[in-house]
Length: 264
Length: 311
Ligand SMILES: Nc1ncnc2c1ncn2[C@@H]1O[C@H](COP(=O)(O)OP(=O)(O)OP(=O)(O)O)[C@@H](O)[C@H]1O
Ligand SMILES: [Mg+2]
Image (cartoon, rainbow over all chains, first blue to last red; front, side, top):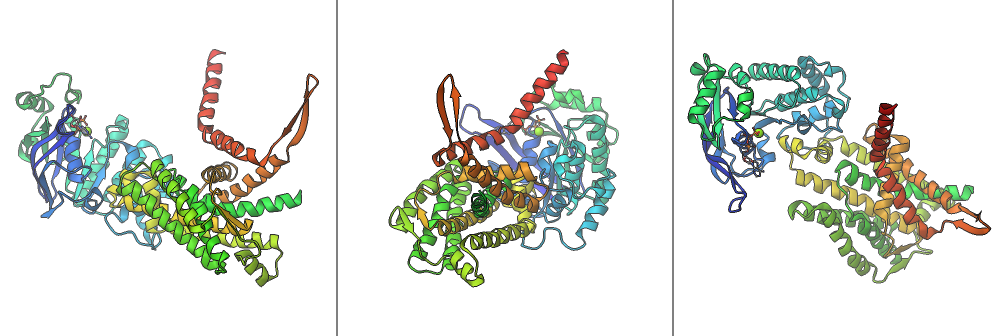
């Protein structure tokens, strides 16, 4: 499905602030994989997702989805394969547009936009059905501007928008971190439900090790721009937070003191 | 007085077309495109040149629209492809257009007195007085522009343009090339501003190289006055509000021009009157005030809060 080959990303190369965000990263994901990504601050987790999504071009290496080479494709072209939810709930939706207008845009992800009406015949029913499954009462508010929704509602809507047209790959970058804990848990279980129902291939960054263990079928651990551990389903089944911490201490170069990894 | 109001209303309608062009870039795309200061006289110059050579006034309007499209395209390329900040891109276009407009006109102004205009043509067709035909033609164009734009902004492409002004990250993640959307928005907005230039030149019977000065501020004033007085529930209503806002702006201006009185302070008699040349200052103050309303509201809310906290 996804094949990432030796990608390296160096920010501001040749300057004093040169930063190697990704260092020769290899990653292969199979159809239906739900991989959680953990690692300390600045480990390169967001950079890995951004490189795949095309937020920036990688310095070297290649990225394939189902054999198609995406490495030099602009971000907007990659969108036909990739659905995304960002950490910031404001980033995933257009605030001045209504819920139905946002969903219309999402339903056409990766398609050429025409001069047909933005909301086609019978589309509203589709939106309402999907919104009802979120269980937030949004199905009665499709003409409400998204800017009026709470952070949790917006993030749930963004999740629906990323998946309403089934993506080949779903990228989630700490998408519950900005929400209060109980809303965050709700959005996370909604994520799990959508991923399972649609059997989505998913890459999810989280700072919460319990979540990383509870969800998905594989864990990867990052440090200093590299993947330092890759834990398959069989090992992941019985793993504890303590095991992850000691694994991190053994393999990481940056050490674990003061790291947000501990806060999990 | 009635006369003043009628001419204020007809001017308001014509200028509303320019204001809706500004609305498209300023509100929909969320960028300040200063090139309208050059595009407005560009539309006027193109139309005046053609009409002064006995061209058909409707064709002249179409040509003005075409000129606006080209200008929007250039500003769009400067901004998206050459990555020049939008303020500077607009200023570059505006400055370049000054020379181009002079080239088109061949001199600093062209008179259209006694020439056939869209107003005289339609006025003759329907046997309307000059004033009536100005309002009639203005309304036809303004309503056509609003309906066309309302339709466009509710198409798939229109949604993408609106989302681009809202949140580029979101719309890129949804597979839209935001550069193209900025370009489309700038083209449509400037097409309307070019048309407005053509209509206003014909209305005032001349085109002048300096007639663009202050257009952006007048456009913003109309947008903001419309929003404050008449609201912006959806795109259609938003544009109708701007039409009304543009009319309200002209009425306010004509009333302000009526101010003429004297005050006595300590035996000194000080005359207070507003000259037409003061209007740009006045308009800028209105726009500055309106744009700072959020800050002013916050400040006064903060003061109230601290007062209640003390008491
Ligand atoms: N646009 C950029 N310009 C320069 N440096 C960057 C940029 N983006 C990321 N970096 C640097 O690259 C490194 C990896 O950052 P990244 O955001 O991928 O980390 P992360 O694992 O997501 O961390 P966090 O847990 O804090 O989100 C960091 O040192 C960061 O400062
Ligand atoms: Mg990150």
